[in-house]
Image 1 (spheres, helix red, strand yellow):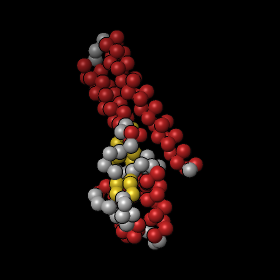
Image 2 (tube, helix red, strand yellow; image 1 turned 90 degrees about the vertical axis):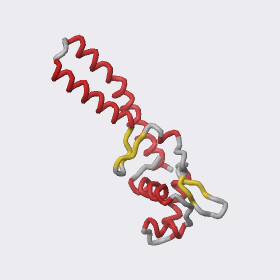
Image 3 (cartoon, rainbow, N blue to C red; image 1 turned 135 degrees about the horizontal axis):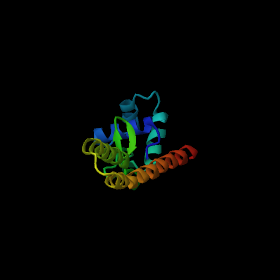
Length: 139
């Protein structure tokens, strides 16, 4: 899981490139001043399971993401839980309906209860993302 903006940017650039790249090529792609910096980033991405090393000592972004990323979406460089999008959408629709249609209180409560599992899942995904970031910082 990309833990920072730099890792995410590097991964996304490699995905867009769509072909294997050498350490020097990655250095130029990212605008790094040294090949050592590029190699460290590539090793970090490899450890995270986002890139793989080819037999020719080149690196390529993996098409199949690790399972940890399946419940997240990347929007403008930010990693967000998919459940957050669903939770916000469902809550907005229910709130709008409740304001406009003015259903009886038991119906409104039932509608609001329907989004609680989405918000619980969102909280779980945010905590998991924090744990992944903390474990990567320790490595």
